[in-house]
Image (cartoon, rainbow over all chains, first blue to last red; front, side, top):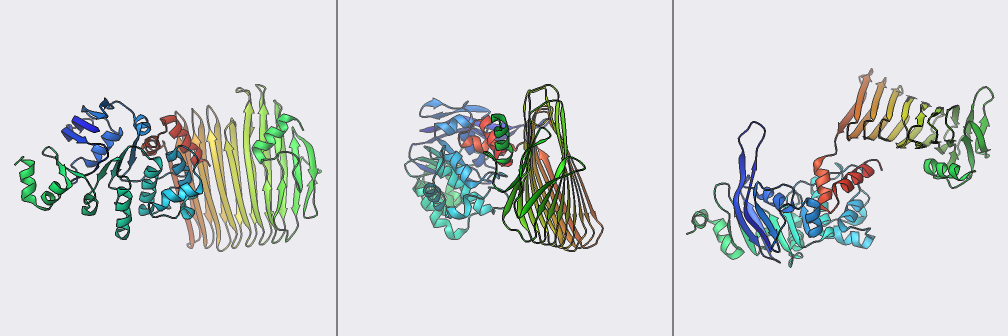
Length: 238
Length: 305
C-alpha cells in the first residue's frame, strides 16, 4: 500500500510569497490497483507524481510504502525499491542510444529479442530505433513511446505515469490502454484526462486546487466527472 | 616493440602490433617501422622530419596507419607529413599520437599535416590524442592540419582527445573547390588544469562546397577550452558549425564563432551551447536506478561516444 499522509507542497521564489500547490493531501493507493489521477491544469497532478517518486520533497507530511516512511528516500533509492516513472516530457540525451537507455532501465545488457519486446509494446520496431540516439531527431510521439518503453523495461511494483498518452496519436490509443492493462497486478498511478484511460482504472482521484481530493471507484467517479452538479456535491461530502 | 609501445598504439590506433598495408610508426622522433604498398607509397622527407604519403589515383578501400608515440620527457617531436591523394582515390588514414611521460618535464608532439585531395578523392582521417604518466609531466600537442580539396573531393576528419593531455593548440584550415565536402567530428575532454584550444578556418571557394563541423566537449576540474571557428563563404555553399559543451566543476569554455558570407548565396550556420548537465537528464537516469555519479558518468560517456 502506498499512502500519502497530510502531504503539502509549496514553492517559494526568492522575494515572492509562497504558492501552495498541494495542501494536506491524504491518499491511499492499495496494492495491485490502477488509479487515474485527474483534475484541472494546475491542480497538482504532476507534482503529486514527483513527490511520490522523490523528484520533489514535500513541504510537510509523509509518504508511506508498505507501512514504511519513504519521505526522505532519494530518487535512486525509490527506483531501486520498485518505483518506476514515465515523465510527462521525455528527456533527450545527445549521444545515448535507445538501446543503452533500455539497458540502464533493465539494469543489464538486453538482447535483441528483449529489446523488441519492450519497444513493440509501445508500438515501435526495435530495428528502427535501438541504435538511434534519444535526441532531438526523434519526434515527440516517438520520444514519448520510448519513455514508456523504459518504464516497462525497468519494471517494478509501483508505476507512476504522468500523462502517458500525451503526444501519442489517437489511432494507437487501444494499444496504449492494453499496455496499461498489462500492468494490472502492480500499483499503477496514471495522470490523465482521457476517459478511455479512466475506463480501465479501478479508482479515480480528482485533484482540486481549492479543496480536498475526491476519490472513489471508477463506477462512482465517472458519472460524477460527467456531471458538474454531482461533482460539487461530492466535494461537499453530500 | 616494448609493452608500453603496444599499449599506446592500442589506445590511439587500436593496433595490436604491426599493421597490414602501408604504415609508418614513429617513436621518440625516430622511425620504428615503415612499409609502402603498390597503392600507397610512404616516402621519408629529406629536408626535414616527416613523410610523404602518396595514394595512387583510383585506389579504393585502402588504409594507412601513421601513429606516433612518445615515451620520454623533455622532448619536442615536430614532424611534417604531406598527403597526396590521387584522383578518385578512397582511403582511410589512421594517425594519432600517444604520450607516456613519467618525468616532470615536457613531452610535446607537433604534427603538421597537409592534405592535397585531387578531384573526386575521398579521405577518412582518424586522429586520436592521448596522454598518460606522471601528473606533473606535461603532455602537449600542437597539431596543424591544412587541407586543399579540389572539385568533388571529400575529407572526413575525426579527432578525439579524451583525457591526459595537458595542453593542446589545434589549428585546422581547409580550402574547398566546387562540390568539395569537409566534415569534422571533434570530441574533447579536459580535466584538472588542462588547456585546449581548437581553431578552424574554412574557406568555401567553390560552388556547392560544404563544411560540417560538430564539436562535442566536456570540461572538468579547472580546465579551460577555447573553440574558435571561422567559415568564409565565397560562393553558393553551405557551412554548419556546432559546438556543444558540458561544463563541470570550475572549468571554463570560450566559444567564438565567426561566419563570413561574402557571397549572397552562401548559407552559413553556427550553433553553440555551453552549460552544465541538464538536471532533468540526471534525474531521469536516477529514476532508472543510477546514482547521481553514475548518471553523470553515463551522460558524459554517451556525449563523447
